[in-house]
Amino acid sequence: MKPYQQLPIEFSILKQREFEQIRQFLYEEAGIFLSDIKKSLVASRLCKRLKETGYQNYGDYFEFVKNNLQHIEYHHFIDALTTNETFFFRENEHFDFVKQLIKDHSQKKSWQAWSAACSSGEEAYSLAMLFADILGIDGQWQVQGSDISQRVLAKAELAHYLLERNEGIGFERLQKYCLKGVGRQSGTFLIDDILKNKVSFFTMNLTQSCESVGMCDVIFIRNVMIYFDADSKQRVINNVIKQLKVGGYLFISHTESLMHVNHRLKQIKPSIYQRI
Ligand SMILES: C[S@@+](CC[C@H](N)C(=O)[O-])C[C@H]1O[C@@H](n2cnc3c(N)ncnc32)[C@H](O)[C@@H]1O
Image (cartoon, rainbow, N blue to C red; front, side, top):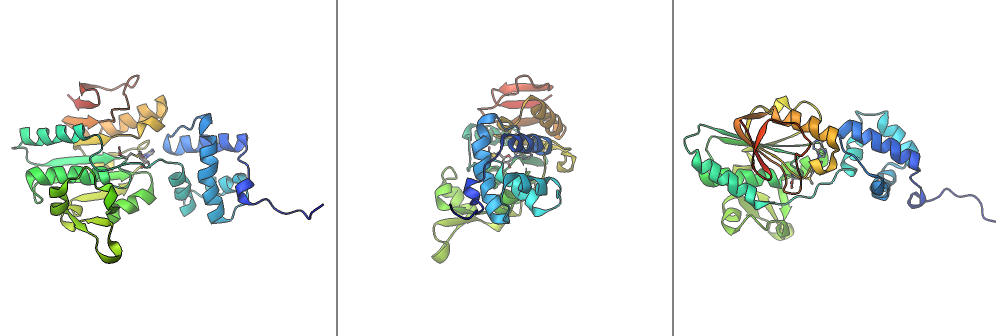
């Protein structure tokens, strides 16, 4: 026999009851629905938080998060359970559409674009590059980016990316709007302040009112609704559509759908809608 030792965190097991409590909490907080097959993913992502915070089991850790919503750990918890994959000019057809839109409305006084669920900022900066290309950097346009995760927003604010992430931007835009890292920063690039200053980032939970965004001509809400169930999707779409100007366009991902969601938008293309 050996003396009793506490199990290392790696061996702490996420009990089914704990998983269900965590799932319910995440759903209430962010509208994100985790199916049963996500249990091991949740365990492995939260395991890192357990190590970081020193909690020995998931139950105690979750109890702390749930009872301390103002604590930074609440944000780490949300961060750990969201998926933030993104890249510049993702689903390029949408950017082609916006480009044509701006050209077709060259007399329009000003443009407001919003990248809702912008992750680390690539989508918002891609939009900004497009507006700058056509209307000039000093043109009457502005891009806003929001996300529920403070961690990804900090990256967006930093605007510092790996060079390998620049696919899609194109050499000309890299020259115009980006600075290449040298020395210790080699292998990275920075969005130049001239472009960065036209983009603002802020925390926003799309399941709650989005009024502070103001009214927008273009809204990208892409690759986030896949994590929502029908009720959350409806709630989020209601909130987001309120911020779309009449005549404005809403873009969802090609892999998403607004089927079974009530809205009064006109479908222009499979993933592009207009408020009429
Ligand atoms: C996969 S990324 C999509 C990024 C970008 N829109 C794109 O298409 O490349 C999904 C983002 O949605 C955010 N998210 C998840 N639930 C959210 C919510 N309730 N409110 C706001 N953002 C949310 C996540 O933090 C994550 O950064």
